[in-house]
Length: 107
Image (tube, rainbow, N blue to C red; front, top):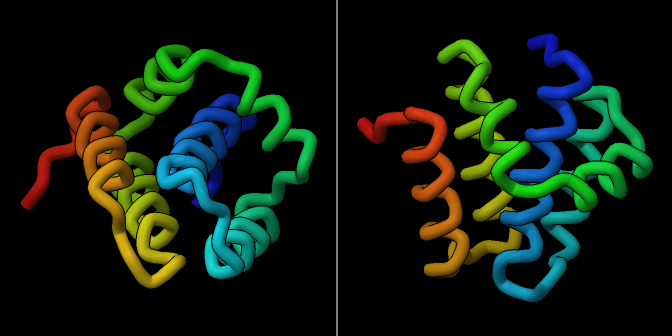
């Protein structure tokens, strides 16, 4: 799936927030992030740039994406949350709040 640069920035912002939600960076999270860097074709600079934008700016970009891209984002976030073998309440809350903000409905 192709994402434009703004979408990549917002996706990386969301993923980074999930990684940092439990105040731990696990080796599994790093491994998945490295895979995503290859698949989505972004570098560490985009991660740095994503950390500089406000969460609401990222949400606005994600909200403007078509539904099929939002579903792909949901899969990425869930994969990242589970990368360390445990999904913390903070991660669940963050993801559910994001889903609500961008109109992803749980099935």
